[in-house]
Amino acid sequence: MTLASNGHADRILSDPDYRNRCVDRLIKIMFDIDDYRGSRRVFIP
Image 1: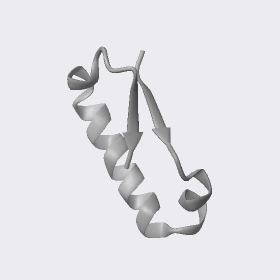
Image 2: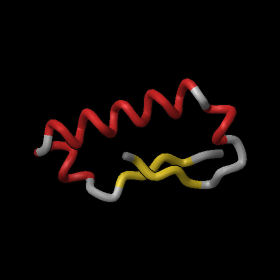
Image 3: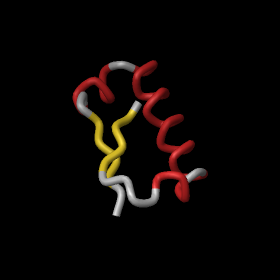
């Protein structure tokens, strides 16, 4: 199972640009989930 990790959880709440980049990255991961099979951890953004 692949785990998506974010190193700056507090920044997601306070920085709208960073939050948008994180959301964009999560959406890309979801659409290309087959490319991430077998990876243990994916860091966002």
